[in-house]
Image (tube, rainbow, N blue to C red):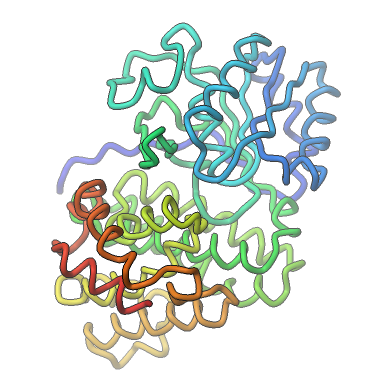
Length: 387
């Protein structure tokens, strides 16, 4: 067996209303005196920041709030959040919200004396860095950021930069499904499909695929798959929401210790150039990429298909079972309410050469982990299939 190094949180709580009931006590366990909540304006408007503040203040902890995070957080936003935390000597960082807020919080938590601004840590070995206590409280069931040691930010040139180090894995992840009850249908769908992609790409990665990630990816996909229709059509179903949230966390654990691949490689240019939310962008390209991969990954896709559709695939060979997985994913996308053609999102055939060029020249690392190599022409063809 190949050697495995596996990193994950030290403490995970999956319980309804746990932010209100347990955040203050958990912060006290980390001897926190001042916490910064890193979030976005929408989470403040929903009242979730006030709940977190009250829980912390009831435990005698000072709170400052940074709620200026935006999607695909640019370096200047991350630097502003760091400046606020340092000005208040915060000894606890709490990422509350979606993946962008949690990814921003991860950088804020890196020790103030180790660097001045985010540009100082791009493409740098961070193994000697220290970290402030870090909690992650996701409000979407999708990114898995609460369980990963990667932070994805947007550099000044517009490209996505991934900072990888076990130093930034959250110490505590609070999975409180009540915080996902107000998610609108389109965000519920996009984040859920994002998490499914995480499971599938983790399971089929050709770089760091391992038995621990495989087990988490299988279980995570089952939880996401079997609750997808329920959370779309019964958004107030707390049990289904809780299963989706935990499934997303399992997916995060899986992919960060394995890898994501070409779905992410093709989705990043869509997010950056056309401001399509990350989960939606992944959903747009997933079936095209998985279909392209069939000649190399059909047996693995078949294993996933049999895990989520045992009755339907019982008599199928690997090729047919793998294709059935893709058929059902396409059904999820087409019934989700999300737009699923590029032309619906103001992307034309003339845009595709530039998008494909970015994939090959900027995100080659994500093609390298894909089950099958891709050329510029093949990337172009995948985009053109979803025009």
